[in-house]
Length: 104
Image (cartoon, rainbow, N blue to C red; front, side, top):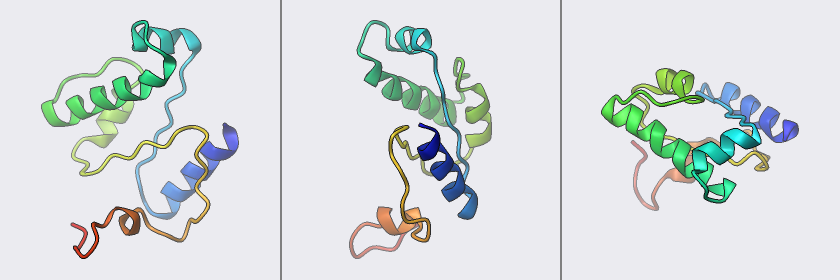
């Protein structure tokens, strides 16, 4: 919801990260999921975004803008709309670092 989205935006801004919220209408979810449950939309969206970044394919709406902004990124992170970021002082790199290895 709105509170979680505001939390995502504030965290991204604080840490100079690219953040983009994808908000879809129910009919857009159904079209993306091609008959599957709506939870599959995130898989379809992330796959299209990865293909755009890695292969240069042009994604369909609603990803054109975020794909343009994300060109050349090294990491993607999906946060569900109901995921609240509580600790804005901790950087994502701290959470993604493999045990005993430096983050690159």
